[in-house]
Amino acid sequence: MKTALVHIPGGLSWLQDEPTGAAWLSELPRTVEQVAELWDLEVGEPFPDSTVGWVAPVLREAEPLVVKIQWPHPECEHEAAALATWAGDGAIELVAHDPERHALLLERCAPGTHLARAPGAEAMDVMASLLPRLWKHTDGPFKTLEEEADGWRASINRAWDEAGRPCERRLVDAARTLLADLGPTQGEQVLVHQDLHGDNVLAAQRSGWLAIDPKPLTGEREFSCAPIIRSFEFGHSEQQVMGRLDRLSAELGLDHERVQGWAIAQTMAWSFSSAYAAMHFATARWLLNA
Image: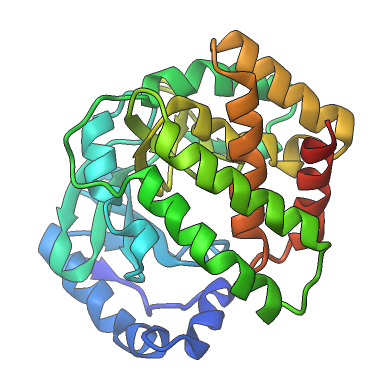
């Protein structure tokens, strides 16, 4: 077991201002050492772009893997259970899990190129083939999409106010109406990855492309297209956004109107705390005006 001096990437610095974040950061070096000893790991420098967990390449008996230590928060609560449910089919494999320390030992993708930055990759071909592999039936411990939608609907007015009302009221009202309508009227429930954008899909020799960083829910299939439709790394224009909506709905046999509704609703619910809020508001406008 060998650990380097534990470096805290700049992407985690915002946690100093969170009620539990500062304490978690102060304990992080000790946690890394404990996890390295537990799994007999040689730990490398952490990846610089992680914002809600400490993630680093490791070696275990010369096998290249990745260790992830999560800052405990609701969206990551059942990440290990989701990866175990997928069992490497469409997502990275979970090698080991230490619930006490919120630590995951994961497959390392090679070459590991992010889909958002893969020259020549047909991103919608990748996503259209990946999504059905992730739609597993499960009786796991996951929060339901209806519960999540109720929470978004209850909080979105306050989030808009606290953000200084950065967009027109009609976008907020439309999202609230859609959340009230869509949540209770869903179709068949499957496991869905609610943050499947271009930086959460990696190139992997064993299986083409694999999903990472699930924020799992159980919900209808139509919802899982929402993060892809708003993924500005795949192009940010009205034509490109609507093209993703139309193509995914048609190729996957999904209800176009419900896909559109979920894309508006989740995009707005996630916008007010995002550094890319203005782009998300534009996406919601294009979808709402269609």
